[in-house]
Amino acid sequence: MTESRPLIQLPAGPGGSRLLGFGSAQGDRVVTNDDMAKIVETSDEWIRSRVGIAERRLATEEQSLHVLATEAGRAALADSGIDPSEVDTVIVATCTMSVPIPNVAARVADALGISGAGAFDLNAACAGFCYALGNASDLIRSGTARYVLVIGAERFSNWVDWQDRSTSIIFADGAGAAVVGPSDEPAIGPVSWTSRGDLSSTIGVTERNFLFQEGQSVFRWATTEVWPTAERAVERAGLKLSDVDALIPHQANLRIVETIARSLRGRGAREDMVVARDIVHSGNTSAASIPIAIDHMRKAGELSSGDVLLLVGFGAGLVSAGQVVICP
Image (cartoon, rainbow, N blue to C red; front, top):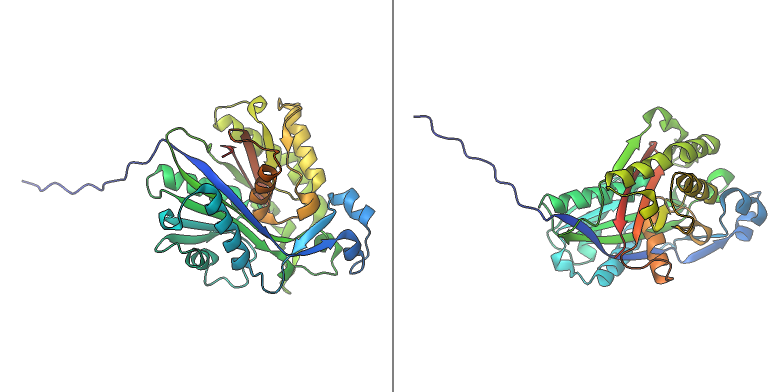
């Protein structure tokens, strides 16, 4: 008689996942457009008219990438009420590591007193937070994890040629974090994501380790191909655009943000839909921009618990990703 083979057992996960809290950290150096005009040929009017930025925040020497990520993670844990001992996974979305090894997530976990947790970095550039949030939600729903700390963190001041006006006026330093946990009712929708590897040469890093981008090519892609990713995220969540209370896109460029919002309103989103415009005072912080914007908007009273938020990140790759979430 043939002996039966043992079966692998899978944990039973909850019905859904939800956001429990947010936190953020930014560079301590405030750099205005007038300050930038002393470094590169530009002006306050020129910058505002093209990208919508009034000022950006840059890190001090003491504010390394993992220091910013740790500060944001600590704030998110405090906001959520979850003790570090309860967190079993840490994900850091970043594309500005100073070295590829060791990863940022393990160092952040240790700094926060999160012992023995799974810890990994994820690089989807400016779409990184949405990619990481999708992974966190699926880890929880599968029963693999219970509480996940998701952090988007970037320190672009190390990667920018300050004489290159196409990048130096835009990018900044900061970190935003969210705690994700189980929920009987889904409060994080399925991720909608896509990639355009054929356009990968439009954003990258030079041999001198400086960031570059073909601004017009990126602008055309972002204003024509990103809003469909956001619309699909709403459809995958079983909702309508008119259900969305707030749009939180990656803070790449104010003109891009406003174009995405206008496109979605033309497809059924409400005129009173709140739109994140954190880029005006924070600059482009890549994977950190969405959680930083949410943290700032909650503190300013622009978002309320229970609001339906539509998140959409997009950037180098080229990649985009989005999901519908319920504001904690």
